[in-house]
Length: 285
Length: 162
Image (cartoon, rainbow over all chains, first blue to last red; front, side, top):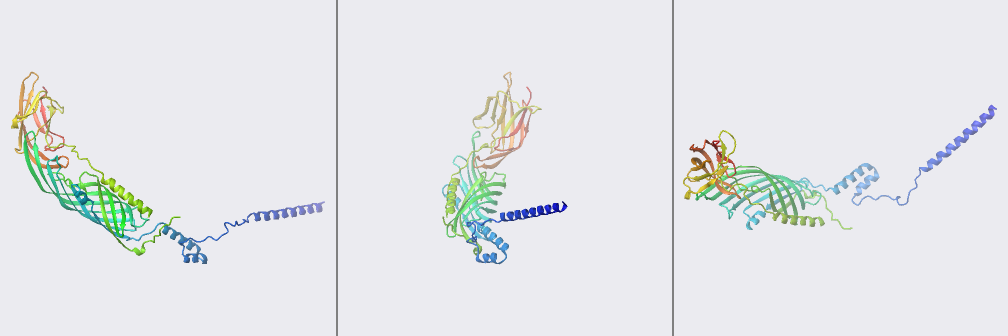
């Protein structure tokens, strides 16, 4: 009896082992994924990947090659211009033109702007402003004598990924001027029927102001460009005298006017041009 | 190439828009500096408006009346620039029909002043002293001695209750 039972258990054990071995073989088969013909190709490197990088990828340091390929790709998407990209020299010429057309005042300046990384642009403006007004229905002649002004500031170019030929920028300026003016007036009091003339000669004042600038600059031909800026400005300080308040501030414009406009011609001197990223003309598909 | 064309388009259209702008040339203050007097009840800060009042300057051309038998609370008193002193004759009418006249003398120093392109050039004044007779007026106080073209009370004239 015992011998039969033992034989029976051994037979059961052998049957279970055989089934387990068979099921393992089935699950191993499931891990084998057939290769589809469409994906069974060798991925070609991009057109801009250098042969040295491909060689590096194949022969050994695969991770370093992949890292370098990614950096190169970013560099192509965000062209990095050198720290000293270019220098612009400009002349603001719109006010003298507008004065010839009847405007009462004019400011003109020369300015130098250093284009750094095609992004940040510190700038200096040095100029001269003057004016004369004699309103028909009022009683005075105001002469703003030619007086100097200076501005310093910085621009931020939003088109830093593009060629420096085209710039769209915003910026800040700090301006200062010291200036002189004369006033001749004719005063009449109707009650006393009294007429007086007076002159305020050699009035001196100074002013300090800030500007928020937005502008565009476009290449016209070769190294020559045109640009305009619109400027919102705020007067921090302007010295009033015992005899009045200045009307015109060189570089700022008429007091009380919040907006100003300038148009400039620029000459661009490229710097470190050998370090500029290579630009490729895109061809339509 | 496409970007350069669009930037040039923005450049010229915005320049035209900005050049087309213009400003407002109005004067929002007075065109001349005239001291303002206001009447108060004596010993209080209560404003009063005398009835039947007549005001003229002594020495004004043609004895021109500034106020002729009117009820006023504020008076604008134009000053004679070249003399440095102006006298004002103020006649008050009582309810019974009688009148009393006081004289107010203002001494001042004129200052040539250019206000703005909109308001023009004018004289400002520094009041150096005020005197008056006392038939009706109790007192005159200089509340703001610098007279400008901006509206403000320069003289407070105190009158008795009745």
